[in-house]
Length: 261
Image (cartoon, rainbow, N blue to C red):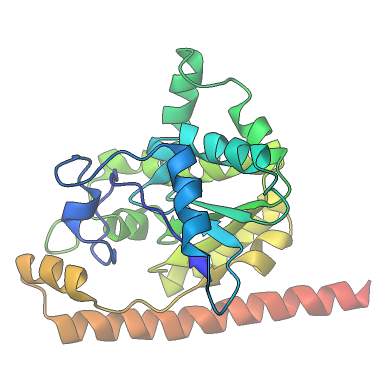
């Protein structure tokens, strides 16, 4: 079982995000601030008396790295309580905040060794969300598109940003797990090959995709855009089926080549 505190803010507008817009709008409103100590207290209280043991704490969002301090502070609090080996702390990110974090470091607002200090914790990993598999599908997947699906090349830099953010974590020695939302089957193979070329075969072997379903928050967003839900869901299902097959072929080829060595 997983304990999942949520960061109530985000910087992208993914149409199929399962979190409703109110709970990631960045405003306090009916919410409350919880210190890292209180978050760990809540985790320990939540797992008392459970039929199944709970050893995973996943900091979700929104986008958790808009408040990067919380990663390190939660890890430090777990260590202070002697829970580093007992609790697996799982971070997640949409990979859009690398430049933002670097700016915080340059301004002295965040430790210059932030990434390296995170990497010191062995019982820690990050789910890295690659939304789309090329710059156009990326912009559509994060809500940077018109109703007709057209995208503005002005925001093409966000594709480079996500690769750079991912590379920063890899170089720091952080255990990263790429996963893909809303892949474009036509560019997925190139996407995987790019990752393998830059980060090694482990990139493809650790990459996974999930089927997207239309939950209530998603339904509300799509209704506002005037999209037909059945057609939208059919497109998601078809892309997932094709993409799963492509990933399977790439992984199979890697395994075959390794067996030849």
